[in-house]
Image (cartoon, rainbow, N blue to C red; front, top):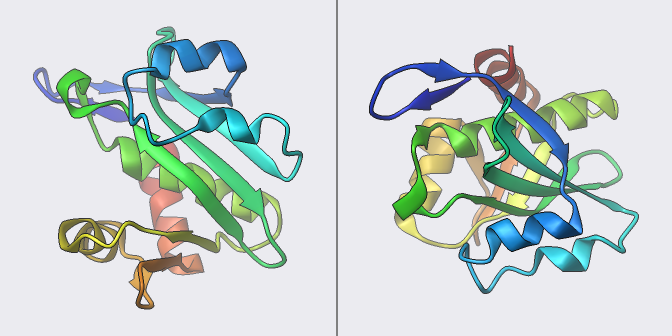
Length: 153
């Protein structure tokens, strides 16, 4: 459940397929990110995360099923100036781990992070992932189980 920053209340989330019409709501997100390129790619699943009963997209993730893990093509949360909830990124990563488990990959997830010290520290210290240099981030089975338990149960 997402934590509402001001009230401290928790809200359940849902993950739904991202649709082309959803991009209108995401226009003021990071302009460098083009979510539309994934709509025609059958190898990539694209999801939005919303608070149950509320259509505002809190985050989105594009996942590709690889040989033995899920590769996160793109992950993004609502812009900071509109952010009302904490733990958005953790929920998105937990969902990627859940999909990996459903594929039989024991929660294994990898992604290419932007190489910013604060972001790399977030992945290693907060998420519990491993950094293999050059921004390559890997989430193993133990971390995946913890993320799923904490953020999707």
